[in-house]
Each structure stands twice: as C-alpha cells, then as structure tokens.
Length: 113
Length: 111
Image: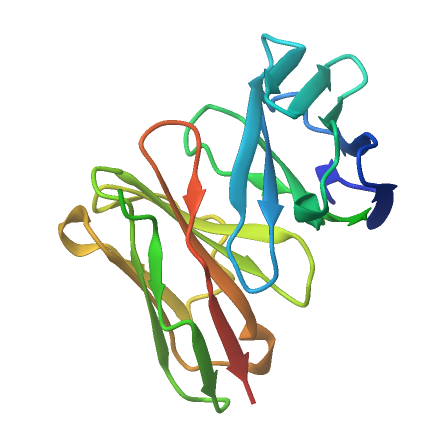
C-alpha cells in the first residue's frame, strides 16, 4: 500500500520551459510535504517544503503547490535548466511522533538544452 | 557546516557475513534517521533516534538489523547475518526540526 505516489517515472522538458512534477498521497494525516532532488550516487538534497496550512510555497525558480482536498501536490520549476536534470522525490510526513518521511518512487527529469 | 557523512560509501559482502554502516549527523541535530532504497524503488524509513533513544523502529525489516546511537552522536547500523535481499542503498538523515538532511548513502551489495 503506497501512501505517496509519483505516477510519472520520467519527464523531458526543453530548457527554459516549465517543468511540472506531480505527487499524490492517500493518508489524510500527512501535514508536511517536501521535494528532494537526487543526482546519481548522491543522497537526496532538500529542495522545498510546504506545510498543510499553506497551499503554495515559493523559493526562487521552485514553487510547490498543495491541494489538500485532492491530496495532490506539484513542483513547478521555472525556467528549467539542464542542471535540474535529476530524480525528484516527493515525501510526506505526519508531524506527530516520529516525523518519519514516506517517499514516492521518484520522477526522473531530463532538461534538454 | 559539515553535512551528514556516511561510511563506507560502498560495501560488497557475501551472504551470511556481517556489515556495519556508520552515520555522522550534522552537529547539533538530535534527530537521526535511517532509510533504505532497494532496487531503485522508493526510499523507505527504517528507524528514528532522538539523541540516543530509539523513537520509532517500525521500519526495521527484522532482527538481523541492529541500530545504535551511543552518546547521541554518530549511529551505526549492523546487519548480521546479511542476506541477498539486504542489498540496496542505506541513507542516513539528520534534523534539528522538521526538515531532514540526507547523507550520500552506503551502497551495500550482498552476494
């Protein structure tokens, strides 16, 4: 039973255009959501997070949108750059107890120059 | 500020052997987590320490896995005896509050 789902295993986008990565979750107890970027042979790098009390959080070229009623979040990267090519993981946490993260399976983004 | 470090970066062992992974968290981070990624699938939670205490070990696969965090600083994860299905990448993460910062991982291959 996968509580966090990233249904697109891969995405290709032209440099300069918008990249939109999607994530769905099933557990209504999740109240904190994050996106991580991962390059090969490295650990996940924190990108951006959002609390369930918000519906949008922005940091430079990265914006995360949260739709609680649909149990859906998305990461927008504008403009996309070749260096953004990596695997992106969505993670969710219920901030009671352990704060453990539940991860999606990742989406491989390729930004074409 | 130094990030989370893990040792070794790679380990190749035979089935039945013992392996010990080490994680050094970011200084001042009381929370330390272990995760595992098997065969390119999702990253799965193993356990959570707060200082030297195990807060949640619900993700530990079985009693062949033993995690310790003596003194509340670095942590070790021992697998004894290792089985083929234990192969994967073991990540450690630490946090002061909600956001966890990950180490580079230890790639374990059990033959």
